[in-house]
Every structure is written in C-alpha cells, then in structure tokens.
Length: 142
Image 1 (tube, rainbow, N blue to C red):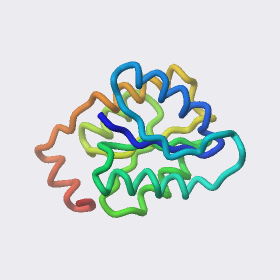
Image 2 (cartoon, rainbow, N blue to C red):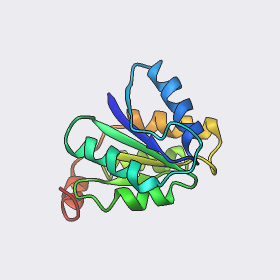
Image 3 (cartoon, rainbow, N blue to C red):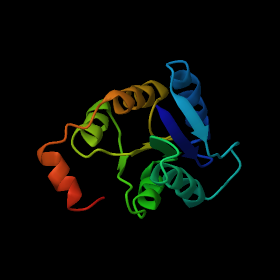
Image 4 (cartoon, helix red, strand yellow):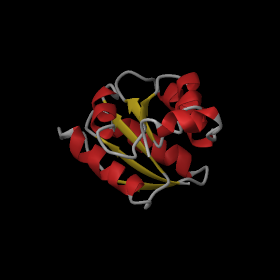
C-alpha cells in the first residue's frame, strides 16, 4: 500500500517512527512533511495529504499532530475524505471496517509509541466490510 503521511511539529517524531516501522513491512510512504520539530501550521500538511489521496496518487493517508484533533478537523473539510481520529485498535478497526476511513489521524503527544503502532497496523490491514455500511457512507461521502 502507498500511504501519504504528514504531521506538524507535535507529530513529527511519531511520523518518523511509523515510516521506519511500516516501511519494513512493505508499505511505501510519501512523506509530505513536516521535516523537523520547528513550529508549523497543521492544516497545510492535512491539505497536501488529502489532495494526494483524492487524486489517487496514494491509497490512503496518515496525519499526526499533537492530539490528532486539529488534523482530523482539517482533513474532514475535503470532499471524498473520511478521516478518523483513532485512539486504540478497536476504533482503528471500526474506522476501516464500518466507515471505510481513508485518512487515519493520530495524536503524537497523547499516544504511546506501541499503542500508535498497534493502531496503524490494524488500520492498514483491516478491509472495508461493505454491505449496509456502504449505503450509510454514501449518505455523507462519495
């Protein structure tokens, strides 16, 4: 899977860890920044990652800021984006299985690294179940 990934300064370190760990599992990451812990504006990175997913350049996206809240709000303003802020493996599974989320949002300052890695693993490997969920998603997203 080709994954667009982006963060602000609050998510930079977790972004780097995710890229390192999951690249070893065969996932390819397109890193849209940021590239340091210097203060930046998270909506800029959300827009770049979402554009990549919308345009089909990447299969899915991951956005990380301090809490994940800002990134999820910024991402969900884009048509065709279904961004889910996940905080454990259950919310990660449900966001994919029932909601077909195409953007995963994480909080770099509120999640431990092992929990975040578990969330990413579940999110990347859980398929959309379709069925009644497809109809429901069609009511709010293309």
